Image (cartoon, protein in one colour):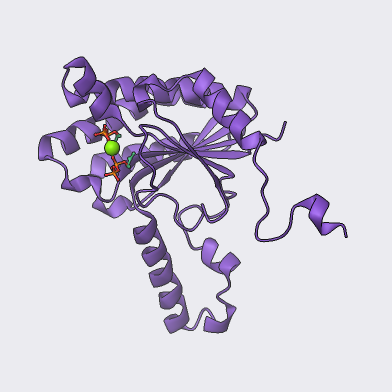
Amino acid sequence: MATPAHVAIIMDGNGRWAKARGVPRLAGHRAGVEALRNVVRAAPELGVAYLTVYAFSSENWSRPKSEVSDLMGLLRIFIRRDLAELHQSGVRVRIIGDREGLEPDIRSLLEEAETLTFANRRLTLVIAFNYGGRDEIARAARRLAEAVSRGDLDAGAITPDRFAAALDTAGIPDPELVIRTSGELRLSNFLLWQAAYSELVFLPCYWPDFSREHFVDALAAFAGRERRFGGLAPREAVS
Ligand code: IPE
Ligand code: IPE
Ligand code: MG
């Protein structure tokens, strides 16, 4: 069975999960962190080498202040509590998104996590935090434009590969599979460049209910897909 090397997940539905139980949204986000822990444990066992999770979008700042601060708090707790275990189990942590907009203490936690786990190879966990695909693309374009104006880069040398190397995900292969929970059928500004040819799997379950079985089912759905990349299916291409 073809297993994707890189799976990216839009972890959506924490709020509705909480609402259905009559508990505060924060309880949904906490349960969401628990689901994340389980997925991180399952990924390398299922043969996945890169796992990207959408944790906070560049548009999530528009939520009420208290929810934004709850989500910042949960990231702090996750890194503080789980970093040692992640490191021990061979997980490399990478963060994508705009760090400049984050509090200094969060920025240093993120740097600590990346530095400590740099040499780990069992799984690369990419956390998309204060991430937006358009923002990432605009920042990459700005960086390349600056290199051109300094005279360090020839504008004619900007190819898709060179552009990809200026994105936050430089060095990370594109996700073969993107999963979104909660029944919403959209990307919400996630990995716009990288997901150009990703297979998409949308699941009705809310993120806190996402289990190893859901993960296995999504991988099976992926294995049943025919990927063509604009070409023809192998059997049609023969003649
Ligand atoms: C996903 O759950 C978590 C984040 C966006 C941070 P939501 O908070 O979006 O949950 P719903 O979509 O309101 O149910
Ligand atoms: C996408 O979910 C962002 C994350 C899961 C972090 P949202 O809940 O923010 O997306 P929309 O608003 O439904 O498109
Ligand atoms: Mg949502």
